[in-house]
Length: 479
Image (cartoon, rainbow, N blue to C red; front, side, top):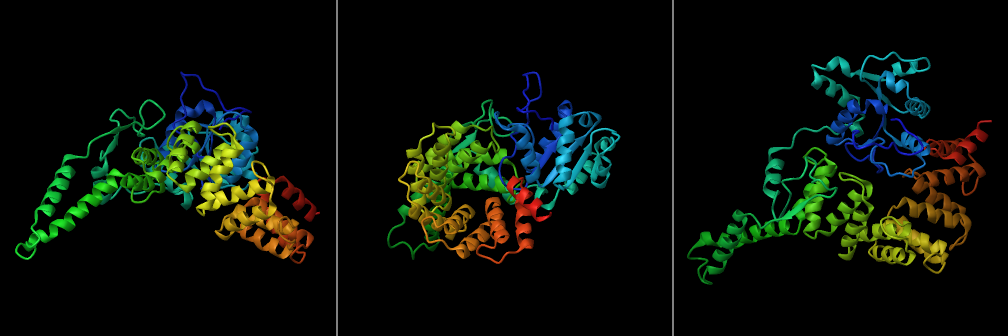
């Protein structure tokens, strides 16, 4: 993708990005292209996105980023580097820079040739990677998409069969129960605004009739009539079943399950826009977890346009109902001034509410606040207490920070062996900071025997994530 120090600005007459870029931590595709080719590129990546593939490109990225550094970090994190090849792409210095980073990081590369393009000098190595000549399949588009699908690594091959009849039946009987998306909504489930449009409706008449019929039958059976008319014995359990179904629909539980299904690709094809729409339906019915999930959709721009104000709104609704994830994320927003003014007192308040419920990320963040003393009285022992609670639940940040406390004797007696133990637990989960600190332990022989090979192994892991101090240590080891 063409990049500058700021995100590319577009006039109203230009094509708009078809969806927000993926910003989370699951495997994703990095897309590189020349902006003059976007009329050809956008339909291609939109189709991949609609099939559930996670796509990072320069659409929907908030302004003010350190753009070149963001590009490099993102390429190094991606699972696949997808480049759209054309003479314009090789005329773009930015596309060429991105290719060089992908070469250096040894990323898998898939090249889609929009038209016949001779590789310029210095790019002969691209012939070693898979290439698909799209222009050769104009009359056989299904063959082209089969090749694209085969070119995706397993963790990115999200194209799934159509929903089963059972799933279609379930969805058709839950659409419009209690609420439904406005019929004026666009194909991705949204109206002209950036928020899902939800219209409150009465329960469908078949359910209403079943409810009152079963209730009436169950209540009209005489106390002594069970043995005289056995078939009516089933009216009570039937009415319980119907009422339970209506309860699940009215409370948003069914819509929440559909949101989960579309987000994770269970039974139905993965579709973040549909997922956000179902979460919106459940959230408007007061379903706390869906309120948190909808807040996360707005925070990360997943299935909706990124909107921090909306994210805070839904996190708060979930938090007010006691949802620990919503409380923690609301605390994070206050902590970092995202969607609300920075407020240390409010950040600590919400972290503590979630931490008291046993939510590991909140326990970690509360530990950080005790360690630095902002918004709380500095108390390293209390910091260790919360780090340990998070670490015992497998939270990598809590494990790493607990290791740091043992390493430096903060809040606990210094114990290098314990430091190595906790660093290793976090490093095995892929936490870069822990990998670097574990590498230092092997480098200096602290808590473990000196081992150049192990030190190099851990420095290399974190250096691949762009960690400069680890790169410097590697260069010293290799002298």
